[in-house]
Image (cartoon, protein in one colour):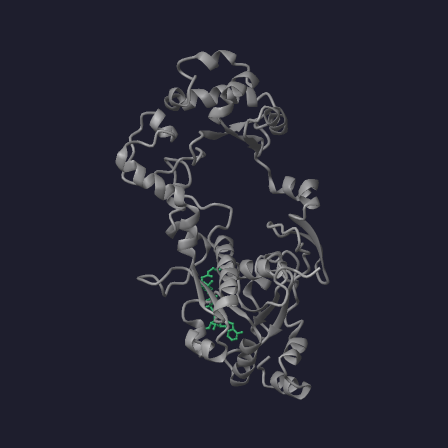
Length: 415
Ligand code: COA
């Protein structure tokens, strides 16, 4: 079966995490992703956080599935000549170098358009145009500059970064959407265009509920935040709210049976108004249904600590999976805190291809994430990441170089 993006050729100048996330997604949808790497060096992540000596790290392999690798020194004259042929050959170029790196190589957006007017040129940078446009940025800087860190963590604690890589992988996702949108536009405009996504902007897009709350603060306290119920005044900015739910249905992380020894024996419990009576029944407090302190959402807001203490008395008598079984039957939204070990071993996630086992010639079998986006007519199969320069000869042949030209480029150190 043809894949959704079969025939789309991606010139992948990405490295580290944000750009590779984007091009891996496109590869999972069937695009031919040609990863260009510096001869003898490659993407820095090949060597970072290594668990097995001299073998591509999981950091690299898990971000570069389904791609082909060509080595090319795009600063050398001969390398530049070859790079021009690759720009002519491809539909999309993706890069996430530090600001100005491609311009310094001589490949400005204007030059790329001259070479191939149908080329879509997609970039990730830390910041958009303005005061910080020249800055290098990594994940946690983006989480901080995008408003996430100031609104994450305990009220009295430090700003906190999250485990989910919303700056890198999140921006890669945004960029992938920009690329397929530009590809769609090209089907009727006939022209390529530039797609920019700044990590600060990507994080803010994901943290938008906190910008919503910033404006609500002008009109009074944020009553669904636990600090409101505790009588603690709000300051000028959206505060950190621990594990309070960011939506209109109050929720918290509650202890479950075994919490004293198991760091993940917890559940996230949401007191959805529609099923409040079911909650009262399952926790053994039917009298709360008519209690003026707890009967309606408005009654409960000033007493959220009492509400969740009461629910936790019950969840502590159940394992997190028992809470899930019992509550799901009653339509109560909640879910267990799953450890990465539990996720790695989850047969359901293996079955859907969300977690996959991949075989690599140097490291053997390892687990990775599969495509989280499922298309009914374009199933994703995860294939291993390429070794450095594994496909150099076949790609250079495809773009028209003779074997003599390839040998000479190798002798010159251009590939
Ligand atoms: N041939 C020749 N040179 C190459 C090359 C190739 N195939 N590929 C990369 N290079 C060069 C670049 O041109 C650059 O050279 P220059 O500085 O002389 O212009 C150099 O390698 C290093 O690139 P750079 O991007 O500056 O790498 P870095 O390791 O110093 O910085 C980041 C890493 C991530 C901080 C930076 O790339 C960045 O800010 N990127 C944008 C934001 C981003 O994506 N951040 C998240 C990463 S997960």
